[in-house]
Image (cartoon, rainbow, N blue to C red; front, side, top):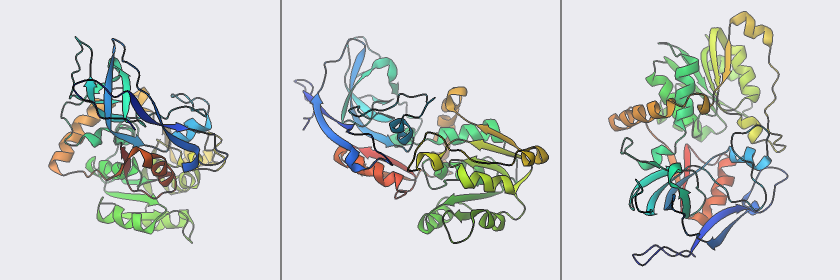
Length: 345
């Protein structure tokens, strides 16, 4: 087990989570191992970071499945997992802008210590009152709602996958941008209650209930919906098209129906009525942050103000211990968490 750094030097080893085998279906605890490895000496352009938090996110399923066209490299058996992390710099080269004690955001999560290129670290400047907020993926929801959905005062907004990391923020963002009615979807009655009581959703549609999703949506939004923020695709996207009002704006940010499928072919195929898109003048666009690099800074500034004023809540689950990270991932895929999930190694 890695030792803590001391004035005499850095630990000689670090611990990390590796993928041990490619699963036939969804990844589970047994497909991962926590291993101890030598901690390499940093190069002149690198810093050593002790990770405090890292994000557990469903998109790892696509990376493990090797889906084509992804902006991040696929994971093979034997690879160490990676993802967004917040850590403390414990060693930095002379002349670096980073110093020991600085908190930074970087992409080498899923380990307790990381040797990271200094250029790949973003120092935290105190804009957000809680460092974990830097890991919450609200930027995607904010960007999609401001760049594509163009929310107007009084709009009815549907957020699919509303209890997840993106959805738990998306409904609140929509309200702050002027939405009049906000509807979410989830597969859990307990989560549905929390969405209403804690996050201000007006109504929640239950996936997998004994009534068709489209029928429930019609009751929750009898006059139809103006905006969709979609994290799921599948039948929920089809139902939303059926409920769309004239000129509705749909922004797609995730495809959980495909990522959480046992087949995980890399996509989320769905059959939609193109004639309805034309007839209703519906816009349907996929959002990626890479197309809007200015959004992250804008989102961080607004989130900081909203958090300090109490206008927005950041629900997250913190899982203690690197050994528990694989189980946290399995629990995330099984829908057993609410909001953002982070591990504190």
